[in-house]
Length: 456
Image (tube, rainbow, N blue to C red; front, side, top):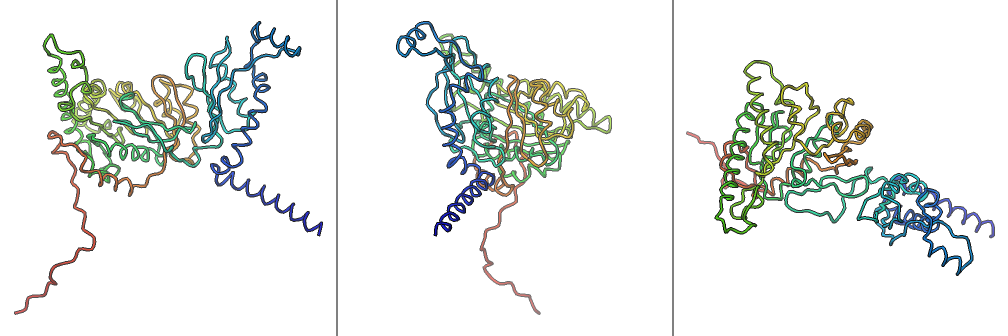
């Protein structure tokens, strides 16, 4: 009987260990909630002071504190670590640290890798909250392996959560903060998935969506019910872009007319963009999606070269002046360098946001990130082909991070665009470019009478 109990206990332990190992690999979120979270909290609480001292994040105590410790306990006075706040569980752990005098957030960020190993978590990220306070975000597992977007994401007009950052926060595409963006990526890298998530997110908002897809519309045609205009080749794009430039000029005339107010007009009525106009007078924002932008630059004849120069000039004007008029650019392609021709570098310089998926060479990564965050180029070159949708995102502030786009099937995206087709604003200037949408057949419909052949 004793042997039976011993074997049962041994078998139960082996089963528990095997189950935990399987859950850690197959269901990391469940493993973290049940096993990883309690273990990491205990490890953090037990080794906090010693870990901070080993990382060089402690300082000598103040003179009054040293005297009080000696008088009360008569023990040796030890260095003081940063004061720790409450521990809040998420997909990892979050806690705030009040830095000691003489410390700065860069000191904590430099020790992030040491803290990761000491507390047994997947990654540690440091964020500056306010002077003297930083937030540590401990991520318990690789959240980019299986993307699950947070339930609560701050939204709003022209704000679309499109991907998940590696620190388990949502990457929100905010057109107010970053008006224009460049998205680069090789074939099957996830570039189309990014475009699909972004377009369907905007489809639920009162935004004019315009597309230029020189691949005969194969990428943007499924979203035709929600698009206000679509050009499927370079010839149509050459006709569409002047219309957008004219629309931009008309909006500037509207803003200028608003600025010509009487001397006693309130300050809140003075504006320099469409967002300062009254809601009744404010035109709808326009987002222009350009897929495979290189097709607009490639030419074979002199006539095509003249057309190319006109289109590039119009795109540069939209990029330079479009933000105040509520016109935003989303430029996508596999490669976008100076070899495309005159104006390519100037246009790229106007695109504030950068998203770089897996690329075929280092030069392509430098085109996207080299001029804003050189250290991000190496991260972009390290993206494996087995991880479609993984990308490095950055902006002209120099900051960058890794993101991954959640999977969204083309059928679901097309269905969303059909359901939100009634939200497409009416822009008379774009009516000639509105794509044809075939009527959807009604399910279960039957003919009224059965046709019969006519006999003589």
